[in-house]
Image (cartoon, rainbow, N blue to C red; front, side):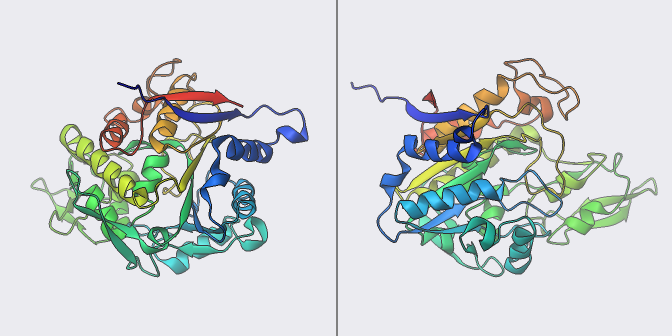
Length: 377
């Protein structure tokens, strides 16, 4: 039996002593090493999938780096546009008008990036295609029309922590980032509860719940506390994110594994109809404990590491995961444990997470391979 060679993951660190070693020049070299230019037919409509950052966030991918990728796509004959999908939760990107306004505020205007922007699932998240995948959790998945209809896609990811997924990289960017609100609901599909002994009745969860599924009630002891209606809760997890006393939770042991599997299936659906037409670039910098969907940027968990590129999203995420965990963690960060080199930094930030499940299952369903060769440029 012929052994499958490991996936190639190309890596450039952040050391620079001359103009030719700038981050933008390194992005160009990563592009060339990964062979992305050969993917494009002339005039190919090319989605550059990224996260524009929630208002209040400042650690999203620098628009200057995005422009470098735009120019690489143009040089290869593609027609690039920047894209993302609207959020399930209420915030500054819940509809296309607010989303585009936030993107402009964050520097993604044409003058900087030299490409138009398109919110892939339409004005209010109603524009999508059903893509057959025939997997364990889903027979088909809902992929935003602007992404489904594109000929090619370049996926730009900011690798960081995540309170439910453990970490977010290329797989999560595909899964949550390429679908409308209905697809996000299908992936979350978890129901949250409130430990009323911890609840301080501050109302933050109520204010941020997109479905108005949370109310204040009185407990048997006469104390005011939040209550979640499980019939109307869509499982977006926004209440979990904003709850300061951490009174909101789920059954971590039973819920997070299936959540990660559902994410992997959606990621598979985002690219299954674009074989050989998708490239991935991930930035290992500003590695914060939270998703870019939160309206703040915490201190990073580890030092900045570099930029990686691959045609395999699973191998790319695996390499990022390994590189982060090789670092010494910052004591002044959200890390509670696992500060030493070699220890799992994401479990150090969110002890209950099982982020590695998304990669194991993604490999199982054929999205990519966890076996990789890191090629330093």
